[in-house]
Image (cartoon, rainbow, N blue to C red):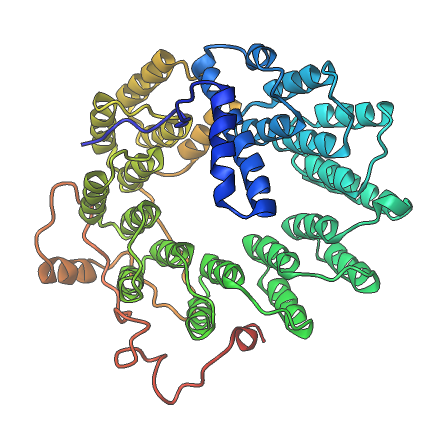
Length: 519
């Protein structure tokens, strides 16, 4: 039923670094002279980096030892690619080892680009002190910081846990940059700071930065506005988000598909479904084309509002536009049916996902386990976990966290002890936050029904109506024993997009643009 998820990177089998160089050189004449030489160089460097990482996969050998053996062919560009690859994973210590190794080589020349990349990697991994140490090392080596280095330093600070303190430091660096001629802020600087201020709900500082941007020679781009709209949208600051959209229009910057997706998700999170639907229709009329995240967001937000028919109509529209559901879409459907108390439908989607995938992602298993737990079915969740482990799936910390909360809420001491035994066997040590979340679950009444707030434009399901439950049960086929409760009866029309069925899509309805939705 389930298969092992892939845990190792598929590095190609290479005989030696010399063979890589020969193969790349042989392929070069087939391309243009100038472009071909650049492509061949990039391809050779990338293949060489893959060779090094393959040699060290699974802790077989230290990366520095591999570099020592091939020191004749390794140069700065290879180390830079290694920083990028290791930065995607938890390899910041290896990055520092490679950097120390570089400094001992004859060909090494201190470079702002290397320091900028390393500072960025350290920041993303929460190693702010290391990032500051690298900044001081760069100055001691004779390099003068430029805009890219300060951008990396600002980004590193914004990854720290104390967001208010980090934002104050970032703005301090921003003010310092404006006093240094070679470090004048560019559009990347403004984009980083604007997004951070919007995420911190600091609308006043956002306005100050926008004013500063208007007075500078820097021109805002689509990433500038998308970052601020996204920050406001995730905080539920709809009015501020719409004011940025109006500013975007005044600057004649056309929205792209990411803008539409952010707006759809933001309105959906606040359950303002009339505006969400208008933005979606505006997207369909524009030159942009919806993507999988567009549909996934709508399905998820309709599911949280327990509007099953509307969520299913999104799936129909997806099929009509030629989109095949991805595994993420199927996970969204599982959670949607879980919110709507349709566990048997969630199980059906999960079975289809398992049968269609060669390896089932851990996130998909977590989604089905969460569906069981939300509907007070801890025993079914435990049986699914047993089956997954038997098939070789290795649960992660996120899996154990959601199950621990559910078992604690259900006050099932046997399942809690069994789960802790599994964690101990796997070597997963719960931290303070793990148990704090469990205490939250204790504070939630196990018998209290879930209450989901909907917008004025969507009908509210009658959560206590026995009549509605009987009508739903009599009009649908008998559910499997996995079904915890009958599906709530909704009066919302199944389709919100069909010209013939939808009340909001008649021929007399004005066609709104994304600007009109905001205003």
